[in-house]
Every structure is written in C-alpha cells, then in structure tokens.
Image (cartoon, rainbow, N blue to C red; front, side, top):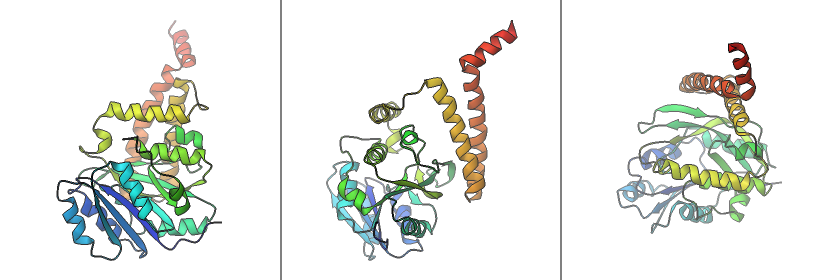
Length: 297
C-alpha cells in the first residue's frame, strides 16, 4: 500500500520555449492545490526562456535548473531525480494544465486508489493560439494490448516509487513517453484511468514530433514492434476495430465524462470523421467486397 499524497512534483523540460513557457508556468501557479513543486529544467536554451522562468523562480514552489543541452530524456530524468513529491508529472514546456483543479483531482485520485501506481487521463490538443481543436480519449479500462495499439493519451501521472526506479530511454528522440509507458506496463505496474481531460498538449510548427513525420512513425513503429510481439492482428481487421474503438471512446467521453463545450464540438467533428473512415474500411473488407461483387453481377 502506497503512502498518501500531499505533494505533487511537476517536471518541465524546456528548450527555446520563450513563446509558451509563461503560459505553462501560470497554469501551475493558478492551481487550487497548494503543495506543488514545479521543477523547470532549462536545457541550454539560447532564447529568452531562462529569463522568463527566472521572473517566476522567486516564488517558493518553482525551481529553475539550468544545464547544457543534452536532450529531453536526460532533462526529464534530471528532474525526476530532483523531485520530492509523492506523485510526479512530466509536462512539456509548451503544454498547460487544463483546469485549475487538475492537481486537486490527481491528488484525490491517488489517495482514493492506494494500490494504483500510474494514473492516466484524456487530453485536449491546442494550437499556437491555445484554442482547443481535438480531444483524445483513452480507454477507461487499461490493457497493455491497447497501450501497444496506442489507444492511450499522453497525460500520465506517476507515483514516486515508479520514477525512482525507472528512467526515460535517452537513446530515443520522439516516442519517449510511449516507450516508457510500455516498459512500465511490462514490469507489472498498475495503471488506472482518472476519467477526466486534465491537461492540454500543444501542437505547433515547432513541436518536436512535427519536425520529421516519417522519423516519428519509424521510431513509434519500432517500439510497437518490440513490445507488441504478442498482439499481431490482421491489418485490415485491426484498422476497422481501431475505428470502432475510437468512436466508442468518443461516445463514452461525451456522454459519461463531463467536458467543456469546446470538447463537445471536437467530439462531433471527430465522430463524423470516424464514421466516414469506418465506412471506408468496411467496404474494403474481403467479405464486404465479395458481397458487393455478387450484387453487381
């Protein structure tokens, strides 16, 4: 049984994030929960990132660590080492906490689930102007099989015992969080869905995962192949099943999980696009194609 949670550590790696780092910091400062430690690792920024952080570093709960550029994985690992909270969160410098009550919800979740090692939530996607354009829903029941298949949002919250014994793989560049979650799952750590959309991931022209989409896919596919050896399905059937599951997730989240109005709009657009894709996949299935061929003869 894990100890009760009183302090939460947020680890934020930052490299040339002068445009977004202040919004990140303010989303933490404005939390209704008080016992938060915000560790910001400036990974050798050459812009005004460090100056902006320094303006807030005088506040008691913010710690600025400046270091030479060694990459995101090492910056996060350094933050993990320095953290003191019973729960630790890795949040990138261009992301923001979705609600003022996000950390309160996380603390309540872990205290109500003492046997859970890792919590995960849904997440919003925001653009350069902080406008929500999509909500990503994770399966409410955790399965390593679905984690391999990427039915899993990136908003993850760890007990201290998890990050103390497990570090990010510094050999990876894009899919650090994906590999980390799979590795933790393979070790038997217990995951549980929190059931809310708790933070927003920003996608913009300078987002690392946008730099080279083919490289992103290649690294993700390599990790998927390494951890997904036992989950090989026929591709066409998987794609149909993928669409069905994602549509079900959207329905689940919209009707059973309270969201913002903007999330409802995102859901409607998402559902419409998924329905169109589903019909396309179904038409390509051999059995459907065969029926259509008979019908046309």
